[in-house]
Image (spheres, rainbow, N blue to C red):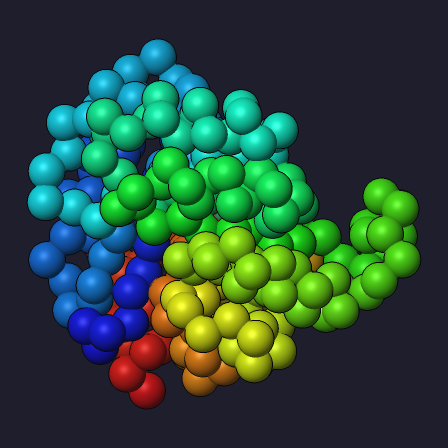
Amino acid sequence: MKNNKIFVACDSTNISQIKKIIKHTSNTKLKIGYKFGLEFLNSKHGRNFVSKLKKKIIFADLKLHDIPNTCMSAIKAIKDLKVNYLTIHISAGLQALKAAKKVSGSIRLVGVSILTSLDNKALKEIGFNKDVKKLVLHQAKLAKKANLDAIVCSAQEVKIVKKIFKKEIITPGIRLNNKNNDQKRVQTPKQAFINGAHSLVIGRNITKGDIKKNIQTLIDHLSQ
Ligand code: C5P
């Protein structure tokens, strides 16, 4: 089970809650990384907290989506945090991806494809003509072209992405129950790994309620 990496989404602004999440998810049978996103990294004490974390796999989910120069500058600005992973939207464009890759150094640069909270109806609303699967496939080609280190997609597209993109595939939109919240393209942890995902992002199904119990439920589910 140690090969199945789980990134726990630390979505809170509350330092005690984040400490609790880390305490109750460390030293399990699972290989755990910690994902800090817009909520925590923009909070008053969030950045400083992350800067002091030791011996953890750290995933900065900044989801950069800007012009090439700004993406580059943002990456340079976060380098002191010594994070292991950093996200950029693939829809920022090939030039921005290449520029970001130029300065990312040892940080694994992760291309985010179509968000798991979007479905075909939502894509149409935004103005895209392609459906989810075709768009994600197209974006996987861009991620490959820009030599990105990993890609984020839903577990429903892993098999398609795998044909194009041979590096790490990370899937959010993971659910152990029927409560999807704001996510549209969901999958169970087990099915996500069966589909070929290398790492999963799990937030609320771990962090809401009894964290230790949630981790045990996840371990039981994966070993069935
Ligand atoms: O609580 P839940 O498991 O839905 O959290 C998913 C996490 O993954 C959130 O932190 C969200 O920002 C992130 N994420 C996502 N879909 C993407 C990329 C990141 O849900 N495509």
